[in-house]
Image 1 (cartoon, one colour):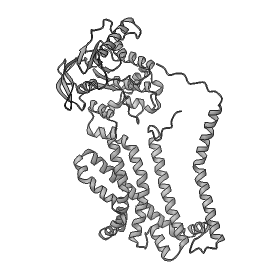
Image 2 (image 1 turned 45 degrees about the vertical axis):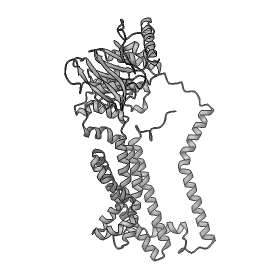
Image 3 (image 1 turned 135 degrees about the vertical axis):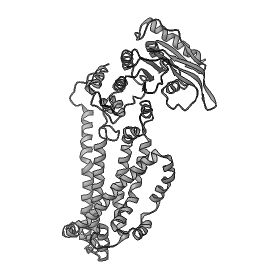
Image 4 (image 1 turned 180 degrees about the vertical axis):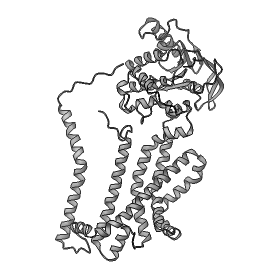
Length: 242
Length: 284
C-alpha cells in the first residue's frame, strides 16, 4: 500500500436554491479514522461522495485536495450501507472484482487469505443471496482490503447490522484498516465514539469538531471514557436540534 | 462474530408435517391437475362426438385426430420442420436484433431518440397488414417469412433488455466509477448481468411470438408447394374439408409452442438459479 495521504475538502453546498451547508473545511488526517456524525439529510453522505468523485445531486462549490498533492483517483475504496456485492458473483469472485476490471491475473491466494481474515472461508464459493447481512458486509470488507487503497470512504457500512454484528464488524474494520486514511460517515454516536481518532458533527449550522479523544481507537464499548464521548456527542446532536 | 449453531433437528411437529404435505401437494399438483383437466375435456369431447353421431368433417373425435396425426405424419412432419426452422431462426434474429438495438440505445441517447419510435411503430402495426407488402418486395419466400416473424418477436427482447440495462443498481454503478471502470466494462460486468433476468423475461414472450409470427406469415403468404409449413397445411386441409388434419396440424402447433416455452423457461431457470430472486429458493 502506498502511504496514506491527508485529504481536505473545502467548500459550501446548495440544494437547488436552499443552502445545504455553509462553507466547511473537512480535513481527514493521514492514516487516521475521521468520523463524520450528523442527522439524515444534512449532506454528510454528499461530502463523502464529493471526495469519491461521485455524482451528488447537489451544487457544491469548492475543491478536494490531498496532503501529497497527487490526485485521489485510483486511491479510494468505498463501502456503503448496502453491501455493494454483485449478486451473480460468488464471494471469491466479488473479492477479485478489481482484478477482473483491471484485466490483471487474479491473486487467488491473497483473496483466500483475506476471506479467511474476515471469517468467511467456509462461504467463499457462495453467492451473496446465501449469506446473512453481517457475512455480506464482511465479504465487502475483504474486497476493500483486496484493493489495498490508502483512502477508505465508509458510508454507514454497519448501520443495517444488529448490535452484536455491528460491534464485531467495527472491531474487524478498525484492525484491518489501521494506518489508512478513513472517513466514516455515521448517524450513530456510539459508533463514532468507538472508532474516531477525530469526531466531527455536521448539521444545518455547519461543521464542528469535537475535542480530540485521549484514548486511541478502537475503544471498548463500555469504557467510561467511550461513554463520556458518546454522551458529549448526543448533547452536541441535541444542541443542533433545538 | 460467528453465526449461531444450527438448531438440533427435532422430529417433525404438526406444523412441519403440514408444510411437507403442502409441498408434496404443490409438486404433484403442478402437473397432475392440468393433466386431469385435459383428460376430462378429451373424454367429454369424445362422448359428445360419439353420442351425437357428429360426422368427422364437422367435428372429429380426439381419437381420430390422434389417428390422423399418425397417418398424415409424412405430410405433417416436413411442414412442422419448416415452421420450426422459421420460428427458431426468427427467434435467433429477434435476440440478436433486440439485444443489439438495446445495447445501442443504452449507449447512445441520440440513437435511442432517433430509432426507438420506429421500433414502437413496427410493433404496434398489425403484422397481417404489413406482410402482403413484405411478400411483394422481398424476393425470397424464406427471407420474407423470417422478416415477418422477426417483426413480431423482436420488440419484447428490445424493450425488456433496454429496461434491464438501465436497471443496474446505482450503488454498484458508483462502485464501478470509483474502480475507474470503462464504459465497456460497465456494460460487460454490471449492466449485462443485471439485464439478464429482464432479457430472459422478454425471450420467453418472444419465443411464443416468433411461432405466432411464423404461422401468421405463412397464412398471408398462402403459397403451397414444397417447403410449406404447418399453417399452409391447415389452409390446404380447410379447402379440402379435411377437418381431422386441421386439428392434427393445430395440435402440432400448440405442442410446439408449449415446447418452446418450456425450453426457454428451463434456460431461464438454469441461468438464474444461483442468484436471482425469481429462481433462488427462499429459506424459511
